[in-house]
Length: 267
Image: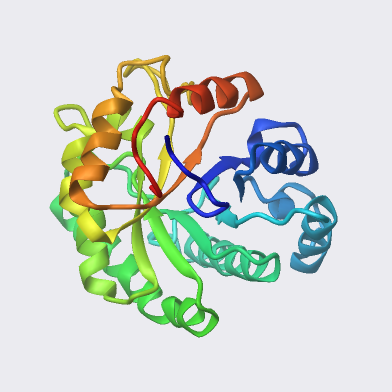
């Protein structure tokens, strides 16, 4: 049986209509909570402090672990357009400020990489991304918060591994999204990514699909074999935090029942 101890297993705040409702569900299951879809950019005139105040009110009484999904919609911190790059970098910084204020110990970011096959564009994208993070990572180091980058459209682990090596900080780690591997990284398996990431793997989003749509379904409903995935983590001695990134209570409960069958302790 997988033991949680308020440390490794979380659910997404998107599972319910409000963060408050999601926090109550997480608390009832003794799971942590990953705050997603920060409301800052959705309401005109809303400030970082407004957002922090709202989240603290919604999280009042929640005692378990908190992580945060940084803002990602339309964000590209490596954009060739100066103004788009500036607002994207601002959103990353604001995400950090919100996460720090509400006590998140891990903040997850998308790379924004779209999978172009133009070598010059890939080089420039990576260069700008690394330049920003070489400065930005000090905020995490000074606050004892871990930043992680998540695969979305990346087709192999190589791009995120390169970022990890270049930024080279104990506070910069990797996140693995199982559903995104199944959908966008055809020809690779989640277990391939786990083995290549190794101890760099700090955080996971676990959900399933049939390789056609980003369904974010429960662990049983799809073509991913989570028995194989959990066995690989156990064999490799890797214990990342895991967010059940599903958007219905039914899927969370089905996945919780499924996890009861695994003889993996303290994962």
